[in-house]
Amino acid sequence: MADTDKTLAAPLFEPMKLNGATLPNRIAMAPMTRNMSPGGVPGTDVSEYYESRALGGVGLIITEGTYIDHPGANGYPNVPAFHGAGLEGWKNVVERVHAAGGKIAPQLWHVGRERRPGTEPEGDVPGFGPMSIVEDGVEVVRAMSEDDIHDVVASFARAAYEAKNLGFDAIELHGAHGYLIDQFLWRESNQRTDAYGGSVENRLRFPRMIVQAVRNVTGPDFPIIFRFSQWKLSDYHARIAETPQELGELLRPLAEDGVDMFHVSTRRMWEPGFAGSDMTLAQWAQELTGRPVIAVGSIGLDKTFRTGHFTREEDPTSKSRVDIKQLADQRTDHQFDMIAVGRALLSDPDWANKVREGRLDELHDFDSAALDSLVR
Image (cartoon, rainbow, N blue to C red):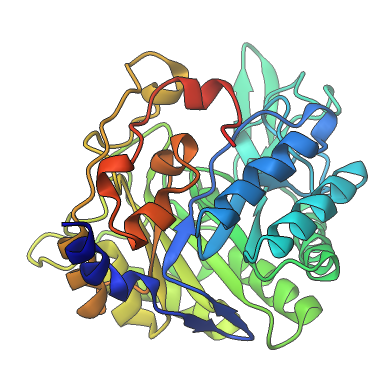
């Protein structure tokens, strides 16, 4: 049975060219916030955590969200910074991943309106977003001015420059899940009446400025990945695009500006993206842009993603479930170019090697222990 599974898995382990980088296989590690970098600095334990996934056979590691140097970029305790002392920690991560034969990209992050006063590192800094938010008479999120917008664009560009300088193999821009870039894309969170709100073209203006600035500082060959989603942490039914046509209007300009690959975040990667078609959201992104895609969403587990798994409002335990034939057939049919594995890799650093070698009976289930420590 193991030999049969090994043969079936072969399409998932073909190398892939992504702009100037060559990835060893089609398995990515999905970005997952860990809150284990005190002071914003990834320590030795974080380096070992990522190193173990490279040793475990992952083709591309996409790090947890790491916040850029804009004062309002962070929204959570003990998440890693991508500036200052944080860069030295990331340098160690890159060196260990490369020594293990892996490839790695940082997920560059600005949380936007999710930030609240009191958040580290500067507690008196409010959130920044497309629209002002007032709570109990206090403005906790300020509507970004033209200067704020240019400051954030410059901050993303500095982070991308540092990523290339540190030796990362690519970068991912976090444009999903209701964080800053996504807040401009989503009508619900962007009701501005200036050049940055309203039409699809206007809502795209700020994200496009970021992609253009990043491409300018990284050069033509450095891979840029853009992660987007329909769903938000606060709303599973949210949609930035109601039709494939509107999705194309959002994604095609980003591809033209320099995005090499779209990371299509869904809670269930196999579900249709729009009514009236069996095509997944990843397939639509691929067809509409001509760019390769990473598909993600509950791969390798029997329980789909819910934020309650991480807040402990729900039991996070999930049994391992890998349908190798289905994934391999989807890859052979070009329904995705890579798959990103999330929770399954938290509990099992060797997930990719086990799948490649047909050792499915050795895969670990996902449980809460993987949320409390950096399993290595």
